[in-house]
Length: 492
Image (cartoon, rainbow, N blue to C red; front, side):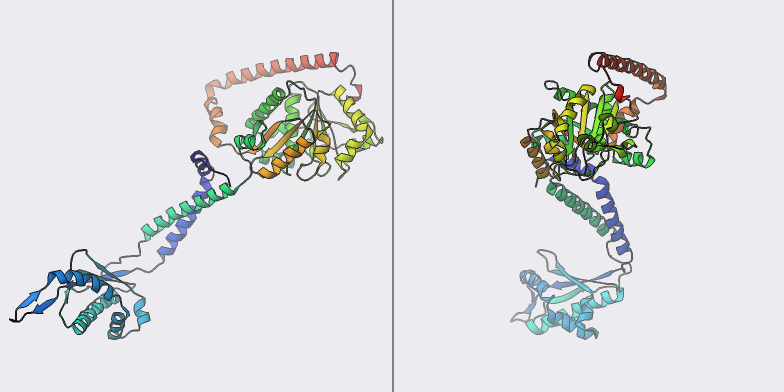
């Protein structure tokens, strides 16, 4: 169970406010409907005055006020006894069970001799009749048992003309408040018991690794992109501008993380399935390719290959065919809609990556592709499910761990990191994927800069930036082509 600060509690309230509000509205409406159809209640009150009267030796009548105050407290409890209720029911000709259907309350004002009998019933005549009957029965009972005239009826109950309840508005609002507190308490308890990693601060503290970027949730964009199935478009065309900016942050921080030890081969893995590992790898590849780098994506997730599905095309051969000597390297390289990205598909399902790495030609494959590509990205199965990524991590220049926001358990992700360390992997950092950012944070900047007077200026600026970026990319390609890659005829 994790400790929560006031700031964390406020974040949880803001995040779950809609769910809590819906729960409160449902509870309040249900309570309102319930009390709407409850029958009206009528309350009748009779007042008793306690004042013992004595006759002294001379025949003079004496009132003892001090004893009356003490008797009032005793009589309040005596009025609730079964013997009084039974006598009242017999006099009215009803059973005690029928009498119990009414609500009888006895109250007294402190330091006075006044007792009030309040009777509440769905019938106004019944409430008046019960209040008066109980008053007379109690007065007679005291006279018979105590042999004194200590109780007088100050005022009899009159038939109420208007209902006294139930307090529909008060009870409905009270239930609404209780529902809010209950819903918030349940949400807070769930959050405290939740051991998944959901923020970059907690992620860095738990794993001891830097968080390179927080990527906005783009799962809906992926679904729309896959439904269209257009092989002439890359995944970046479907995601939002904010997601693209997050990817640029990831690309920049990756370059900073590898500045002392350049990483040409990069393994991308996750702890569990559905954390967006493959889609994020493609967005990363596009971000690198837009900087002028020649990128090769290798799908080694033989358990669930998805790179070809995102790219809208599939290769006829894969890396297993090449390692087994059945295909040439140019036969397994596939083009994409982006000129700077090529990929190797995966067809041999359930093939062990450990067996692929053990091939003698695998090291040769790495050396060859390093000569023709600036960056080679390897997509592998989730490490908590299969050991494949650890077997490959030892041969990679660096590794990148993708963590789905609120998806992976803290202990599971920790074990994955330990497994990578045991494989002597160079972990550059972690990317927190599918982060639900507040709507205000997503669009406030865009709204501020989206007035009509600035549209033309922004368009001109975008065109100038695009021109400069194109020139830089062309220069980068020329330098790479002339200095590093003398021949790429088999890639064309």
